[in-house]
Image (cartoon, rainbow, N blue to C red; front, side):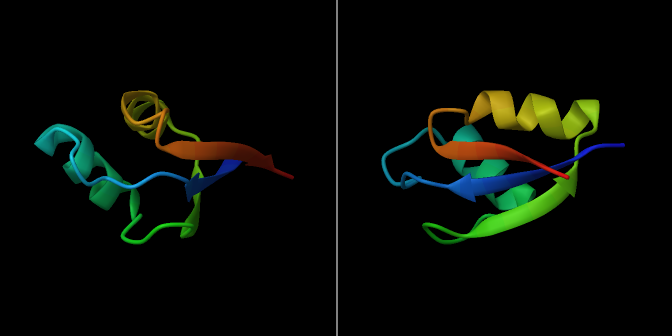
Length: 60
């Protein structure tokens, strides 16, 4: 499977609780923190939930 790098670019403050929990579930706890994860359908769905708070790059 392909890997993707997810970087948090905006704060989770003043966001709905669901979006805050999604950021934590992705492993993003601080601004400008990055994680590399497999691009499974579950992860892609979580990224779509918080797409306005993160930047996504494909890792080769």
